[in-house]
Length: 473
Image (cartoon, rainbow, N blue to C red):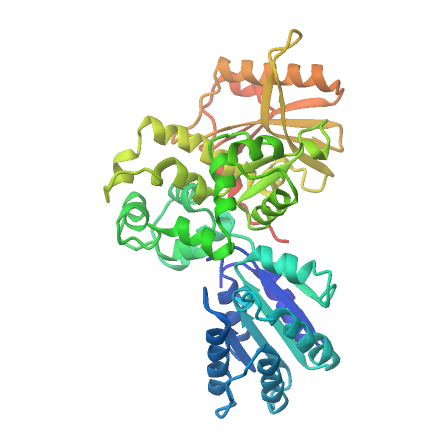
């Protein structure tokens, strides 16, 4: 298994406990939740069951009955409701001779059909029986992250504070993707790995579909632009699997996909048509937990003025190229080098950098320094020309790093225009914020910089190789 060391250690700690433990594993579709749990425990479960998507209560219960019959209760009757279903599960567990009884309920949000009373029955199962024992390891898992967070982790009812191990599963980093590529004997250089990451992000399932013998461009053509490609319709499947009502979520990411720097809640409400109320807050929080968007506060602004920005690579790529793409199974190979491609490269690379802040800090030698990351924007007025800084790091050692991120296939030439841009932004930032900290210019250049005199004006250079650094939690 590639990576996941921290998550594996958490699962094994729960297994080694002398008490019953309740573990919640969650994350977006295809990120590897089920694979992780099955690999760690080698499928040695006392009971394992997976909910069914878009099925009614009767079908869910019938499926549960079949799982009981396959795993030690051949005469299990069809439960009339979820209370009876969990009573049967108790019988199965009590008759097991396994020392540590592992119960794995996968895609648990799908079992919570309206008016099924699943959640109250599940609460009774854990609170009234399993938690009182000392030999139960209950693991729940699901792609509908918002359901697990609101109904389980932040429950205000019977499951309040009942989860003992909370394991959000994040996408792979560039380092982990590189290790995965090598494990599958795919021949790709780092630039190709980086560009693939810019397209599909760090979702292991997406990477598992790359085929040996095909170039990076042909793999993308086959997966995303061929009518039979496994990711051709992934956008619709992705949001419908995560959210029971995907429409407002899609409206939000669609609006964010049109504005690089992001939007405030008010701006987003106007652009998406989603009312600016508690529901919008819930939608945004769910999207943030799933890793589709990031929420950041501009330096000097209050939390209510926070900006939301789309950072999911696959969603960005979909809006840029797939949403209205012609029916051409070689679309991507033909698009490479076009103006649209070049614009997308710059934007997508910025998002990759934002997803690898820890690696950037490691390169700068400040991973042990207390710091905060921000974006910053100010509009033009009579005193200054306005400026936007997509990333700055405000450090406790009296330094503020301001960043420019540039993607290129050759070493980047630090020209006078870039230096002027740095200088203008730094001066505007200092004028507006009144900071007296030292301001360092940091350039993240995918292929490094060319050797020229102007490069001496940059305090630090970060390359894509630095973004591939291995960072342990």
